[in-house]
Image (tube, rainbow, N blue to C red):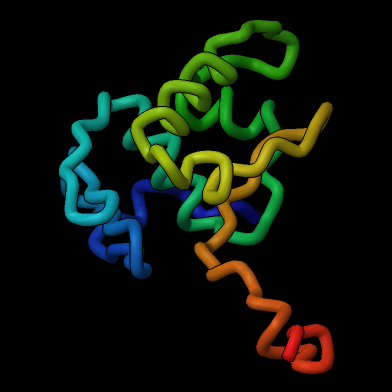
Length: 123
């Protein structure tokens, strides 16, 4: 189902983010960010399941060992800190699916609509 962050050894890289599963730091626009152990595990699990919604209960179970009946805000706090460290792309990379969980989105450049619709460009 959801790949485990233990399947380390590979890295995620795009034009802004470099994340190596075997290293406790990551790089955003060549700026090193230091991740705590939990932040690293959380980002690794999300990256390994990029594009898929990872439910809260799965994240809480895999990262913290919590059971399904545990209610806590620790996941939200860690996500908020992780987004802050991934500034200015934190909200782009980590999407909140309200009431369900989180999804890591690979970075995509915003579309330049003028390239696709030249008739809108003023002459």
